[in-house]
Length: 302
View 1: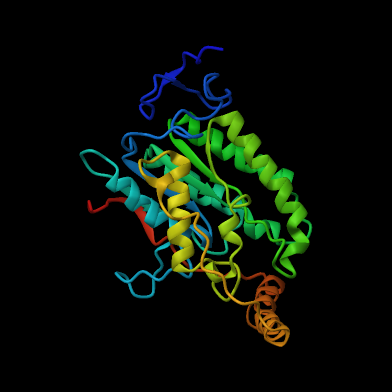
View 2: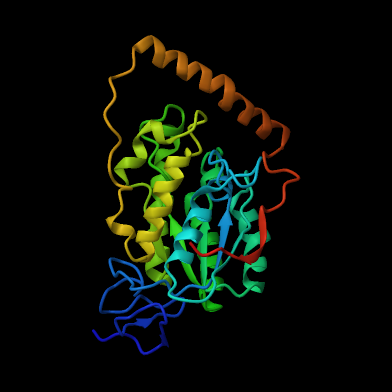
């Protein structure tokens, strides 16, 4: 099947055609021509905007240049983008705010991003919804797809992400089925819209508890570093797929049962109980917070 003669992709050196939203990816590679195993010679993106919740805000990855703020995988991905352009500047904005539900991300952040005319948008949301009783992963995916279509119709390439497999996390493993359904929808949305996907569910290294903060919700600085490289590889950035982000950490001896039980109890007291309390009060960890990088600013070149 020949590639579709739609909009020509500046993101592909292969001569493929970039699909418009609602059309399948090109018949040659069955994936966005700048992803799906195709490695670019250089980054074509010059204005990247990150949308989402605490994961994209970068919690648990302190920013040494900005005391009290966080860096995170999206900031690190933006740095990889800046390093991969042959010339010119790369601009970056991060509109993500902790605690946001998917509907809030779509309602509050997508229009702001579109006004800035980005050529690349990462849209990662839904995790906070999935942890709530009664949430419907199919409805969440429908709302996500509508936002992706808007972004693609405006000419932006889109990076999505599956959610992490919670099989090894007590309490959170109870929502594993909903997460799996949502993730299956993510792949379908990507297939229909030509979005790229950062696959957290299938990443074995993500299951190492040492890459997660004590809240078991947010990654450490090393976790965010690896996630940024995984995102760069999903986009086909040069050199990213050959980096060490898949390499397992050195093995550790198993934890003693008593120590493991003590850690579980501390986690419930320190993080689960406060989270439930906020839900009961109708509060969010992001109440009153503003985006850390609300407008696109030029990134320094490495």
